[in-house]
Length: 397
Image (cartoon, rainbow, N blue to C red; front, side, top):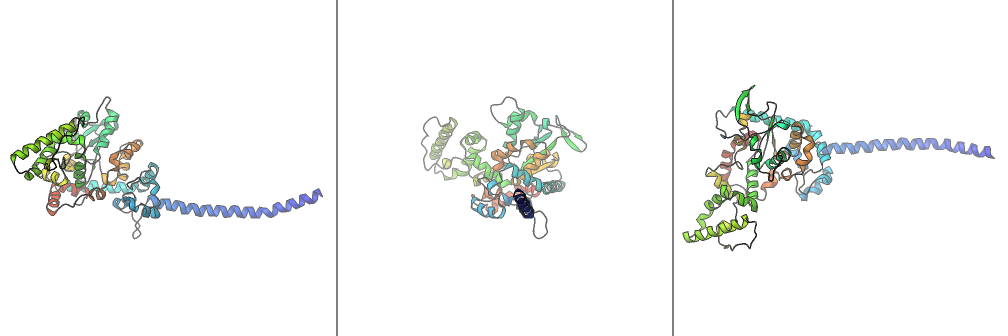
């Protein structure tokens, strides 16, 4: 009886072996098919190819991954399944995802930047002896082997704060003046490169640029903040407001009244609003609004006033003279930012740069959509005033 039962068990096990083996083979096949499908879709998430010629699309097209309004996110998710790594503005926000996204497009990003640098050289070759700024706006950070020019309203605050945080021991503000001892002064030519006093010859020179109109809009946005209104009142805000709006005043007596209200309002802002807001006439043109708008800023610049916040990048950074290694665009972040951090040895610091407000600055299309279009006269002025920026960095008016 025992032998009979053992024989039955042996036969049962023998009969189940082929079934289990078959199931295992089927499982492996299904896993391979599923894995191939999954990773092929992930690859599509990270790298886009043109269906017509199988070449990488431009960085502008790559931006469609993270430059969409919230209303479009659902459609994007259906196509690319990336909503989970987009922030509320529709930009890539997950560091690991960004690392992969950069890895798969690194070669193309490098090609794009190299092409830009060749275009810069080409434009510089046609310029002759055009006069740049008399002062130098290049800062040496020899500790990490870089020299940097801050183009204002193009993410310069992020870099400034990083350099101060890391290399200035005692500081109570983040003023750029804390780095003034690092401003380079002209010295000598070494190997065809204009080397500055205290600058290492091996330093990598870089800057970040931005569309000129976006810079102006950003400057107007910033000027509407209480602390900026106070800080910039005497440098340009007061003149910009009064030069543009004094024509709305009917008499000299009315002008004095409105000026007095303006001064009292700004004193209130200066003292951090510690007392009740002073009375302001609804008809006071200088306080409605109490900061310049875009058209007023443009008219103010056209009178010949100079300021680093709106100076053309090529002139402010003396692009042709200083022979930069890398010039990246704020609009092309985070891809080009990742590339720059990689090249200058700051890869481990990408979390800091990613999490700062500058890296989430609106891209050009989003920046301009809430502002009226420039008229033809303003466009002509933009083309003339920022002509080299448009040529060098491939921007449109």
